[in-house]
Length: 554
Ligand code: DMJ
Image (cartoon, rainbow, N blue to C red):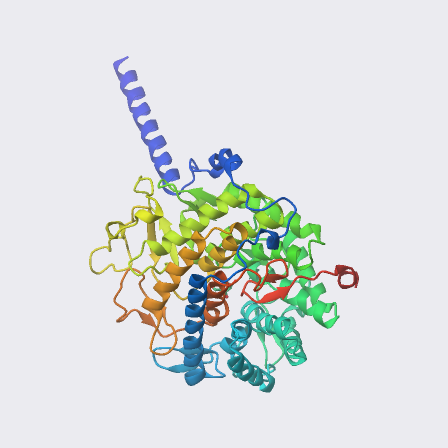
């Protein structure tokens, strides 16, 4: 009897211990989603809808005048573009990127003058006419059929930066030379589909040899981010072949077996067109713009293709159910699933900060006010990832370790909540700040996603706080990344001493996207009206195709 009770007591003790360990493990990895976002749904009825059902984004404009403050801010951004462009022109004209610290250039994209091509439409819409014409003349002289010997061209990057850049400029200028060059680039990149049995592209092409580089897998962003560029090219040239290539790839992505409607594993097998279900599910690198193009394809063809709307609606619902999480400190963020959806990681990439903007656009276009509040909360988190660092720049990746406190209001942010660096020798590990935001990768590489979301949210809601947040970010960029020549990526957003923190790199998306979105944020809302244009993932403005019948009939 005594022995029995000892055994059962020990049994109970170990069972309890095992259960507690399991619970701890599940909580640690976020498997217990006590923080589900469903609680937000109760509040949906309180959302103030900033548009009237059925109206266009343009109808919600209440701010088509340029106030004095906005004019000053807009010009400050234009001056930043002047500084970036002058640096590029003086030290790297015709090369791929300016290296702002060594004051030279690089050809890291195979020598396609990618900063110049990517920036054309920014120069045009900022009315930097002289610079624009000079850049355009350079494009006229370019031979896109050649790259640096031995260089393998990344199809995704060159579609969004080169093809997108040429098409965006053509949309604003209508110079046939730009369209001719766009077609040349598309024909080169379309080689990626040659030899594919299922219709998925290779990630790389050998431009000089005009051959794809075969690979066993491709990520969904690569296969699902050619659609806007290729479809726009078909409409402008009247040649349906580009649209057909893009549609076929979209269909593979949609028809492959998915375990969760609306959620797509990051990799596909290029031979059988099926998903690798052990791949992660996220809104970050490798996936992001695929989700973006579901909605934007629907917008590009003026809401004619219902299937893209359905795909976007399924994905936004799945994202809300499975990827949006709430930290103990009350912030909504986009986490990631790994290992066959068994491990939920409480990390958010800067790249994923485009999603609040996409959700806001979808909320307006599809009249889904229930998405707007979540979009605004996610944008707030992205903004706070900047606001709570010593420099005011946002980290490349951040996670949520929970201090268990409710966040203070944005206005109450003071120095005492800045993150504390770990002891010497571990410079990249930080304690969470009061918001529970812990930087994981402390670089800021001049990325656009947060200001992109602020721009769209401003256009959709007309709430001036988004302009204020964008202005804060712009000032941090000016203060910490502006070099004597151009702007430099930054090593540690928690270190205000720029000495040793500058990286010798100014990516082309800084001029193509970051500065463009900031400029548009302070411009009258009819400059690149979202009723007339849809912005590509690289912020290139494509006119919405209003007369779809002829275009889609081929
Ligand atoms: C850009 O090239 C595009 O926005 C792309 O979709 C992913 N991110 C980079 C800039 O961060």
